[in-house]
Image (cartoon, rainbow, N blue to C red; front, side, top):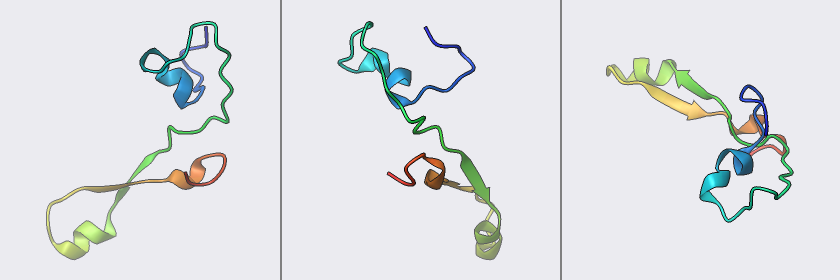
Length: 65
């Protein structure tokens, strides 16, 4: 079993929802779990009280996918 504090990738995270057995060895690059970044300039330019977030997919180990 993995440590609850170490991110091990999407396959392991959603293992219970995938056709993967408990004894299947998972290989991961640490993909996924990229941050949401709150934008400030666009909502301010719109003049609305909205919150806009973007995903920073460039932090994936292979760039964006």
